[in-house]
Image (cartoon, rainbow, N blue to C red):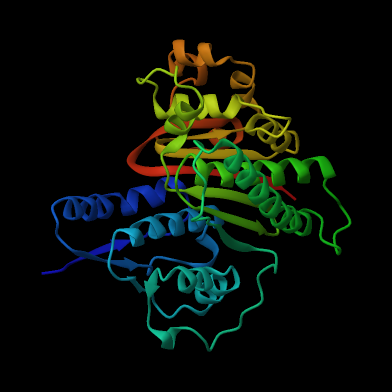
Length: 343
């Protein structure tokens, strides 16, 4: 007999909130799957409010639902109240289009329609980078060709999207082309790495609001640590997820690594949030200055508290201004990276 597992997604206002609300339900689903018991997920969206939805968290949620769909025989049920502003926003950012494309959810069709769409910035959107024909690295020449072709196509799409979000025609203040190029190239590489090393499709969210620009890359893959081990077999097996994030953050490749992107965002007064499995870090200028000059050996051989200071339990305004790190109550598979730049 199939068991219904009802999971309330919460307000979708932060990565930590997402993990906290869905963690127990995901554990129940995994346990049932391991023991051969069939389950049906029912996602409860009734806590969603228009102005509390965080674009990056919504993107992360889709990556979670997508992974679950691979292990279920049918789409997951979506339970949502009639809230026209919420439904309009989800429609505008392509949430329902992606859900239909990937056969993720079922919902009451009567809910879709009868409200005004098109009020969201037209360049605010979630999209997926999915390539099921990945070539294995054992075939080196074919692998390089696959990577170069996909990098070129994906970068063209992402850079076009970023150009319109950062520097729309009706704005008098323009961001530097270097910032736009850095975010575009880094986002492309992160999405490619999700597929190549994380073995999961990447969900990319881009948004321009009245306060800031958000670009987010989310997956439910193997996380920083296991991805880094595929590139460096010498990494110690005892490295924690927070150490993995720090190592991944200082890697710079051809001036378009994560280090360059973080520094560029911070130079504009922005911040970068990275979450992977059981931890989260928010880089602002103060915290980033403690990390950016470190070597991999220094990260591995030092206590995290000696590098980052004491972790926060409840985030304060001061924490948001200086940056913070924390262990999360619930672990959420994969990696989630968000660039936030004030406008």
